[in-house]
Amino acid sequence: MKLGLIAGNGRFPFMVLEGARASGAQVAVAAIREETDPAIEKLADSVKWIGIGQLGRMIRFFKDEGVEKAIMAGQVKHVQIFSRAVPDARMLKVLLRLPRRNTDSLIGAIANELQSEGIELVDSTYFLQNDLPKPGVLTRRQPDKHEQEDVEYGLEIARGFAHLDLGQTIVVRGKACVAIEAMEGTDETVRRAGLLVKRKLTVVKLAKPNQDMRFDVPVVGVPTLRTMVEAGATCLCLTAGKTLMFDREEMLRFANENKLAIVAV
Image (cartoon, rainbow, N blue to C red; front, side, top):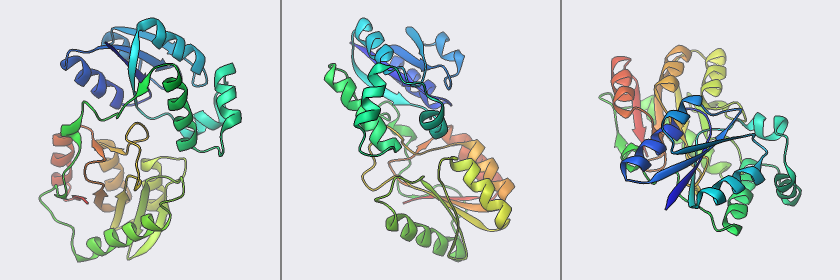
């Protein structure tokens, strides 16, 4: 059996590809022209470059390759999906059937289209279980009393809008919400918060209560920690078991060197 990989940007697709190949699977990659790193061609068994809206072309590629299971990995910027994509006929039909134009609805509908063709979209962390944090403090430094209070307040905010399709990042200071992620992504949200309050910020990045692990899984890496340091953030809270940590050992080394606290709940 050959695995299909729908590759967005960043390191996530490469991690999935490496994990899949280490398990002995062949991988056919549908690479998104606007997002995917061209270096993917050096590792994949086969690659087809597609535009964001070319759903029909992607499905035909997977069918031709004998793909029965697919994984979606890597970010596709929200503005790309909803502002710049030129849909083909199949994608246009999907868009016209959407009950609401948000990311969950769109990707859920794409998963249904794949399923109708005998292609199952599976958990994007299937090959990456060791990169999901267990509950507890991950760094040498634990959150102090004020940071812990801000974590708890951030969790309270998250529960308050859990039913809405908003971003996964909340930035808090002194039990006041400084910024909530919209379409800009985690790092830009943290930067925006730093412009408003440049000291002792706590970043809470959470999976949704019913997070569909097939897509839109929260991810963090060293670049986010660097952004936190620049913005004056000192504590990061993640969802245990549902947040991918890229280059985990490097992340923790950087956090410890910069006296950041990271906790998984």
